Length: 455
Image 1 (tube, rainbow, N blue to C red):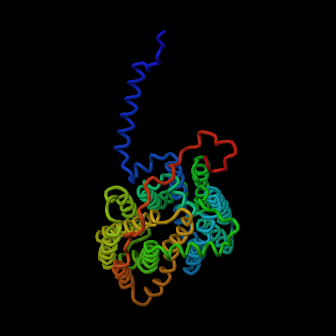
Image 2 (image 1 turned 90 degrees about the vertical axis):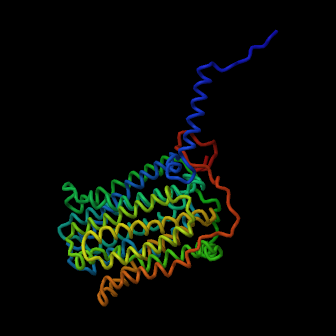
Image 3 (image 1 turned 120 degrees about the vertical axis):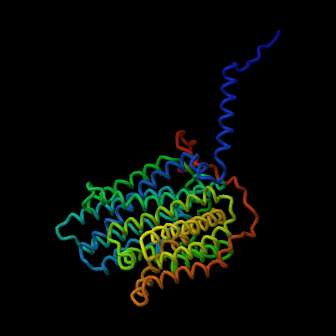
């Protein structure tokens, strides 16, 4: 007796063939390490969009907050205090946030931090609505937002490999840098919408944007727990372990030192741009906002370029050429005698600034071990974001004595001096590009008894 053999129907065979062709075509389009490959991850795509929406709200609030602080007191010192309350925690709290990211579930850290930021923004909005707003309450609300941001930063950075896999880190880092700089452009523009004429309205809108990142992080599934979780190891010892990991790895040490010195001495022009635009170029407030938006546009293009056209470039060469070109662009900007020269040169400074930053960040993400990722990214946030306001304060004192141009040129000279240090060549064995499994939407329930955040 002949046994019947199940054979697929012709239309199913054709469908399967077309599906296979489509998958092969998709693999050809999504080159590993490209932004498209990173966006192919549903988990990364959702978190990326949620974070983008939240960052737009943050920059809307940043513009409104500084304007509100200036109108409330007319005191530049109070504006400086508000700025330090917002950015100062990056210098002090980010390393602690890195320890927490290597100790606890990173998804919970991100959701908790966003909830705190939303709550503080609502409190700030109610404070702004008062007949006589309390300066102390305003500073405390801003400080709470700054602390939550400093704790969230390392956890957010450390989750990127879990969302896209190690092979697509370059594309993910460039996209994250691009969305951050795009929000710098869109936020101030949206803050000028007539509907948002009052600071309190802007603060309420910003509070609502945190719901996007809370929803995105909460609904996607990815491996959010650190691979090594020594619950009983003291926090200070764990922090010291992160410092040792950075010191023992030459690439990490050089990259962190480069970004720290670069942020401290070369990036003061970003926060001193308003005074430069007013005193040296004769711009009004609208002209300054357009100048800052041009800088943000250049930075966004530079970040995208690292993940696309320059993805295959040697990172050491990329950083060194970027530092040299940044120094030249900043020197031209500092000596600009008219608007066109200023706009073109500031766009170039933004472009090369984020080529340097994105290449350094990508190198660190590739080099760091997963067990130390949170702590190393905490050191990165401290060096990159935390030292910029300190450098701006130092530059402000120097500008009063020698002027804008001289201080900006010193920033360019510092960038050139960092070129020999920016060696990102690794002598360690090359890791597999495969890395952790890429995240996906949690459309299927976890296995019985599985820990939260894991399949």
